[in-house]
Amino acid sequence: MSFTGTGNLLRLALRRDRIQLPVWIVALTLVTSSTVSGVISLYANEQERVSAQQGAAENAVALVFNGLVSGTSEGATAMTQALLLVLVAAALMSSLTVVRHTRQNEETGRAELIGSSAVGRHAALTAALILAVLANVVLALVTAVTLIGSGLSAGGSLAAGAAIGAVGIAFAGVAAVTAQIWESSRAANGAAAAFLGLAFLLRAVGDAAGSLSENSTRVSSSWPSWLSPIGWGQQIRPFDDNAWWVLILPVAAFVGLVGAAFALTKVRDVGMGLRAVKLGPPSAAPSLLSPFGLAWRLQRGALLGWAVGVVIMGFAFGAVGDEINDLVGESERTAEIVEQLGGAGSLVDSYLSATVGLLGLAIGAYAVQLLNRMRSEETTGGLESLLSTSVSRYRWLTSQIACAVIGIVALTLLSGLSAGLGYGIASGDIGGGLVDLTAAALARLPAVLVLAGVTVAAFGMLPRLSVVLPWGVFAICLLIGQVGAALDLPEAVLDLSPYSHVPQMPSADFAAGPVLVLLLIAAVLMAGGAALFRRRNLSI
Image (cartoon, rainbow, N blue to C red; front, side, top):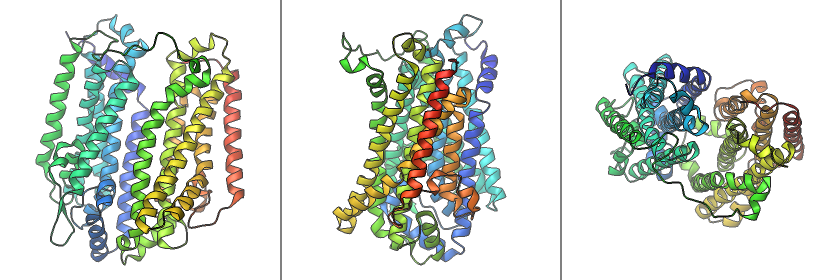
């Protein structure tokens, strides 16, 4: 009886995620396939792949952020570039899916409404887990078919798909547990993300401390990597060992975590978490008396987490800048791709421009994520309660936008300063690195603000699409920015991304015209979204 109604809840979950999960799967498949295509065209022969893999294996920073090096075949070289990113993304997809259909339903009152019918205690969690498993199985199969279609071996392609799906399934189990412990969906997602960060760190330490093969084209990870689900996915080593036995580890972790989650559901009340909610002060701080103060209070935790990530990434990318000539080696095609991504100039300047651009894209994701909370406030009823006071719609919305813009500017400055510090320490010119890369980061700020404007406009005009639409625009910007030049896409397609129009400093000079136009577009989108929001009805 505990599982009564699981089928009906699974159909409901499929209905709710009929757009969101396919977008995830298509986006991750495109990232994998585009990377493979880029690697095949980038490294035309064995010698170039050997040089690239040796450079990656001998550089600790590359091992931390690119992934494990496992041979010099086309497939193995592509996995060094793509597998780690897709493993992390699959883990996020699974965690968000499970929390959305468990803890979020309890938080919004849906679970209590559903529970008034003939639904077993474990039905909701079981339906969410089945949905997550199905999504990862589909992702694994589509990835494998895509890799086979790219001309890679069937065995390695299937192993790559299995690695991605298995890691995603393992993190579905992680989210199943965090959804039982924490009372809010935000806290449950945050705890799952923290576990993902720990898994990434363990894998990074294990790979960076690993030993090299005799010809430096293969890295054997040290023991910390074997404590991480992300590390397990890499240890399958697609297109090298194809170590299928490693799949036992994520599957066993999933079974154990799901068993623990089911046990925890028996000892807590619906809507409550096992972790006691900390009581706040008896009276609110004066800052919470204004919409801006409330918005800042809700956003500061996310800003702090993003700031830590941006600083670490920026410093690491900057520290590699002084070694880029050695990493590229004699590969003219690699140098050409770096120049296409970062603009014409010296190889070091092109690389720094490309990495600052990547950090700008990451900050764009922060902008979309943060402003999407406005829709969450609307659908959960928090906005309606707030607007029942003397707070106007315009004041509430402008407070949300102002806090988001402050966060965007702060992250942009941190990205430039951290990258400049890393490069300055490596090159011996800290002052020059700080000035040049901070200016380069600020040059990308208008493109990020355009993404923020798109999110606000979608919220005001198309509230039911206000989550999917901005993320779709971000995905287009990401694909154009990272693989557009490598795939020789038409100029008209490249121009769809606002990031294509910002000055590519430090490899290019600053140009005020495109910056002013992008700032104007961002302002118009935000103003239009605010005007439309004031005239529409609140909706769920």
